[in-house]
Image 1 (spheres, one colour):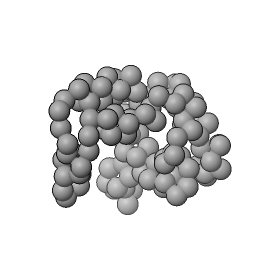
Image 2: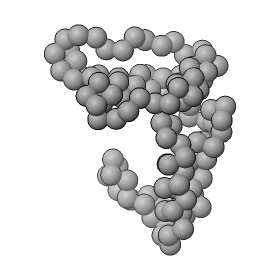
Image 3: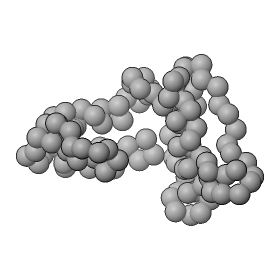
Image 4: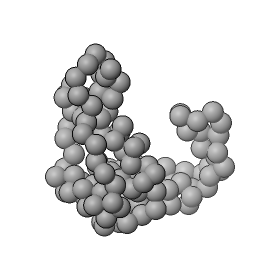
Length: 118
């Protein structure tokens, strides 16, 4: 959700291709998927309220969100990526509050990098 307009433009471009399967880099096998299904997977970025299912800030996925936020924070510290737009941060906070999810502090200290610190 860091740059929804750019992601949606990418999703629109790919959805114009003729395909019936996708091969995600993070899964072991290809997945049946039409161009329409591909584009539908990105519809959550069009909801300005963030009220879509599988909200990462809501249980049970909020632990995954904390991990991803730790990684994001580390990448920002390293200068690999820029900070999210303040509107994105505000939306994330709104989703957290609406879900009742508690927010743990980011990983601190120790050896390692980002969420992998000891």
